[in-house]
Amino acid sequence: MQTQQWPVFQLVSRLLILSQLVYFSYADVGTAAQYSPPYLPTACYGDDQTQFPSSNLFAAAGDGIWDNGASCGRQYLVRCISASQPGTCVEDQTIQVKIVDYAPTAQSPRSTQSTTIVLSETAFGGITNIAVNSINIEFQQ
Image 1 (cartoon, one colour):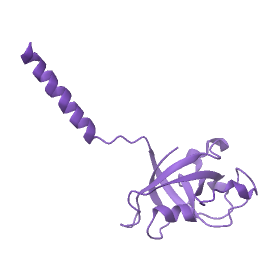
Image 2 (image 1 turned 30 degrees about the horizontal axis):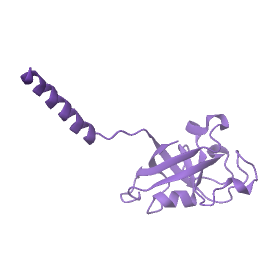
Image 3 (image 1 turned 180 degrees about the vertical axis):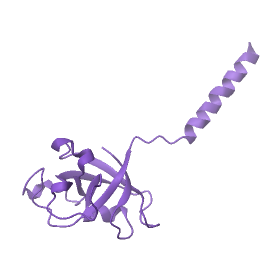
């Protein structure tokens, strides 16, 4: 009986070791652009200045996450994962943004059309090292 337990022990211990090496991500991947002031009015809250977090980490939702306006007020964790220019992303930097607008109807133009999310200047600058039009992101609500 002891000889039968040994292979089971080996299997379980190898699975435990393997589970520590595998990275599970619950985030989605998309693209982000940036936009500049004026930010008002917004599709979510109109001319209300109090909609913006004091950190200025906010964003406009693209069609993919807009959800007929249900995304207004949602908080997303956003991380730059790559861009067309090497060294663009701030490594291991994640920001939390609040959705305050709908990108296709935002007051100011965005740096690139048809992205998942459009970040405020402050938010975009918080996860990038250099000026680019768009970045690839990992994001989760």
